[in-house]
Image (cartoon, rainbow, N blue to C red; front, side):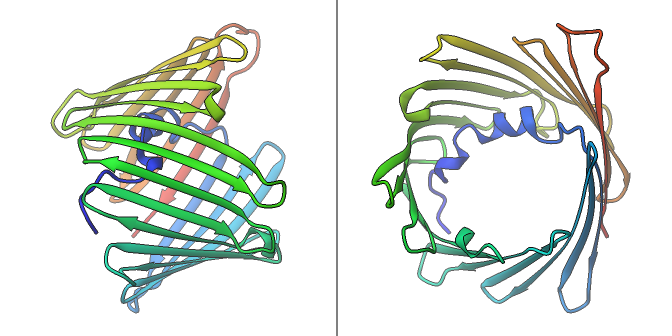
Length: 276
């Protein structure tokens, strides 16, 4: 693949991941194993309030194809197949779910040194079509995306964005929600290993004249432990502790509290992921 500007979904992704990833109030346990033949198997159990769920996922790579099959406790089966380099600088992703065949989708991605283009369509009679395009370089990129509903013949979305990325920082601005929202984010790495960082995000909803400001950070306590925290202008405070109990096996403890309603109990989440 080329070393071009990346996908439209990558614009602002680093800041978004730092502010959202690992923040959860669920109880989750997963264990992964790898066979000699190259098959990876992951079993997951999840509790969200009074709801319980479980799934088993298996992954196998053969030449330029990656096969991923996930079986949920509700008897649904999701299969995803990723083909790389069928044509030069291309990737194709096909997914289908049983018994919900209407969720099947095919996506094609093309990577160039100065542009990236993707097209995705649902595999049904009147599909939803999503198209994205990004121009630029790994340092600065401009992108746009649009979604079209062939049934109603209307656009479901159209967004544009710009991203500037340096070795120790990245900034982005996205005009989304059909021009009704503006999101600006900035992330700065505090060390060369990129294990500690500070991030800020501002989201303005134009139709309601509402602004939401979120600040957060990541700090490496030692080579096994990381802590994260975030606070937004609505008073929501979140914190995460990640500790590597065994090589590649991580326990995550997270919590969230509304500082404007301190009489309510905070919510906590616990996750344990065991990997070989």
